[in-house]
Length: 258
Ligand SMILES: NC(=O)c1ccc[n+]([C@@H]2O[C@H](COP(=O)([O-])OP(=O)(O)OC[C@H]3O[C@@H](n4cnc5c(N)ncnc54)[C@H](O)[C@@H]3O)[C@@H](O)[C@H]2O)c1
Image (cartoon, rainbow, N blue to C red):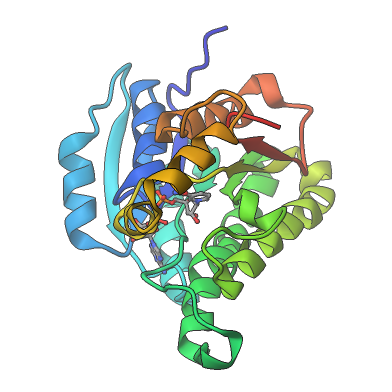
C-alpha cells in the first residue's frame, strides 16, 4: 500500500515540535505541499530547516495564534489562493496540549488557564474547520484529522480539568462535523494518542514520575513501549489517504494497546 500526497495542499498545525512536526515531515516526504502553522516563531524556523520534502513536496510556514479567529481565516484564505482548485485537501489539527499549565485544584484554576487550553485545542479546531469548509464543500472532497487524546476518552493523566474537557470536546466536534460534512465528500476523524514525552510540558510530566511509576506506565501498555510521534503520523496519514475514504466521525486510539 503506497500512501502518497503528491500535489495536495496539507495544512498541519502545531509543527513547532513533537507530534505536529512528525506529521508535517510524513506528508512532506510523501509529496504534499505542507502548510505548517504554529504560534512559535523559533519552532517554525526549525521546522522549515528540519523537514525535508521529497516527491515534489514543499514546506511553507505561517505564524498564527489559532485562538485568533480572523488571523486563522486570513491564513487559510492565503493558503487556498495558492492551492490546486482553490481548496485545501487535508487539514490536520495537532496544535493544542496543556500550554505550560500544571495540575491545580479546581478552585485555583483561573479563567485564563482554562481559556488558553480550550482555545489551543477545541476553539482552534472550530476556527480551522469553519475556515476550510466552504472551499472543501465546493471541491466536493476534503479530509480533517484532529489530534485528540486518550484523555478525551477517559481521565487525563495530567489532572488538568481543561485539558480532559477540551479533548473530549474535540472528539464530540469530530462526530458532529462528520455528520454534517459527509454529504459533501469530506471526512472528519481524530487520532487519540496515549502519553508520550514529546514536548517540554510532557517531558516535565514524565520526569516528575518516579522510576517505579514510569515502569508501571510502560507495563500497562500492551506493546510495552511508549509511543513515538511517527506512530501518530502514520495513523493520521492513513486517515487522510484514499484508503480511509469510508471512515468518518471516528476516533482511532493509538497507544500500543486497547
Ligand atoms: N504528548 C502527549 O503525551 C500527547 C498525548 C495525547 C495527545 N497529545 C496531543 O497531541 C498534540 C501535539 O502534542 P505534542 O506532544 O506534540 O506537543 P505540545 O502539546 O506541546 O505541542 C502543541 C503545539 O501546538 C502549538 N500551539 C499551542 N497553542 C497554539 C495556538 N494557540 N496557536 C498556534 N499554535 C499553538 C504549540 O506551540 C506546540 O508547537 C496536542 O494536541 C496534544 O494535546 C499529546
